[in-house]
Length: 176
Image (cartoon, rainbow, N blue to C red):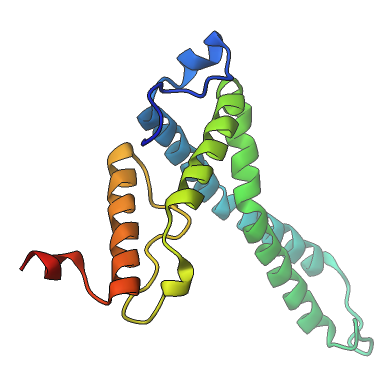
């Protein structure tokens, strides 16, 4: 990445410099972390919904009472869906925790690299005020970057977005 001649920040010790020697290695670990987060969606959604649903199926319901002013079956259904949705929202957190447990030795350096990478993104991204229907902001947070080549492509797209927003055209128009 631009501005870095060494492959790791200078404030790390020698042991950590060997763990993630290049930015491409960092991006591979980042992709692996994202896979853990994605894989955790299904179990974290299914288990809370199944457990909540099985609880309500075992419960004896008096049809003359209400739960929070609703029919008991409606309340049970909403609680089951709500538990599943809550699990869905918590899924990436569980995936990240599981990734960090399995890759403990990489976590400190990954945190440093994450911070450095986000600082690069903040410094080099195009101004969102130049956004329009014909000129949307390309990957504002850099979520699709998975290699140094992707980062360079992202930089070109950010510069192109800036040129279109300020000068009203693309760089391709300048070459013709």
